[in-house]
Image (cartoon, rainbow, N blue to C red; front, side, top):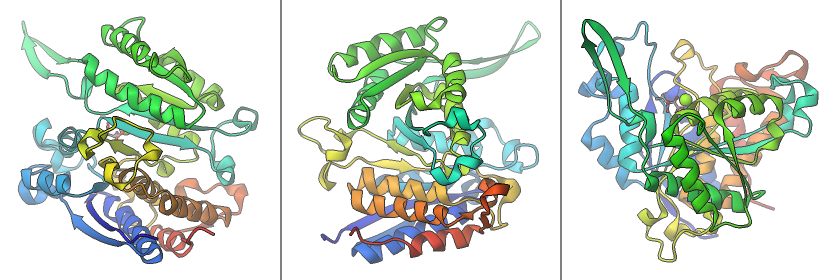
Length: 389
Ligand code: IPM
Ligand code: MG
C-alpha cells in the first residue's frame, strides 16, 4: 500500500471540542500507523479560544494555516450564550462568526450530513419500531455559504420602533454548483434526490427549484422530486426510510439536519463533510463521481460533527466522540481518496457499538449498554482499526 503524507489542520474550538478532537486525532494516528501513512497535525485557533487570545474569533493567520493544509478537522465552537462573556461582544466578534467566515473563506459550499441508523442503536432512536422498519440511510446536502447566513442584516430603529432585517439571497451559480454535487452523490447511491424548498412562498426557493430542474437534465438517471420544507420536516419523522439524498439551502439544512440527527440515536453520532469545488484541486476532466477521485483531484474539505460545543458537559469526559471520529473518516474518503482507511474507521465504530459500549447520550436502559467515557470510546475505536482482509 502506498504511504502518503497527510497535512491536517485541526481546530479544537470550545466546550467539548478539545476532548472529541483529541479522540479523533487518536483514531487518525492509529490509522496512519496501521496503513503506513504519515500525518502532520497543525493546530488552528477559532471561536472563543481565539477570542480569549486574539480578541477575535478567527485571525487572518488562522485562515492562512487552514487553507494551506490538505483538509481541516473541527471540534465545535461557542459557549453558553447566557453566561459567557463572548456573547457580550458585537455579533461579528462572537465565536459563531469565526465559523461562518471560515466556511466562506474555504469555499466549502456543500455540507454533507449522512444520517443512518446503526442496528445497535435502534433502541436509542425516538421513533416507533414500525416507523423505523428496515431503518434508514440518507445524506442531507446543505448549501453552506449562502442564503440567510450570509445576506445583509441590520437592526435599526424606525419611527421609534426597533426593527431587524435579515436577507435571503441566492444566485443561480450558488444553487447550480451544490445541485450538481448532489446529483453526483445521488448517482453513487440509489439515484434518488429530493430537493427541499419553500417555493410556495419564497422567490429564492422558486429560483432554487428552477435551477435544480435545469441541472437535472444532465442526470437523467436520477429521480428528482421537490418537497416543501414543512412537509419534509414531517416526512422525516413519519417515514425516514423514503429518503436517499436530500438537497436544501443553508437555513433549512441547519434545521432539518438537527431533526434528522436524533433519529440516528443522538446528535452525538452525526458527522459532516463540507466540500469545496474539485476545481480547487485541479480537476481537468470536470466533476466526476466523488468516489472516483484519486488523491490528485480529491476535494478540499472542512470536517466537523453536526453537534455543538455542549459547554454544560465540557471537561467531564462524557461527550460522545463518535461524530468527530466519523468526520475524520469522511475526511479520509473525500479529501484523501482513502476509501479503505475511511471504511476501517467506520467498521471499528460499528464493532465498538456492537459490543455495547455507549457514551451517556446514547445509553438506553434495555440495551445493556456499558457506559463509556469519551477517552475510553476513542481508545476502543482506535484499537479495533485493522487492515482490510
Ligand atoms: C451547524 C451549527 C452552526 C450553523 C452554528 C454553530 C453557527 O448549528 O453547523 O449546524 O448554524 O451552521
Ligand atoms: Mg446546526
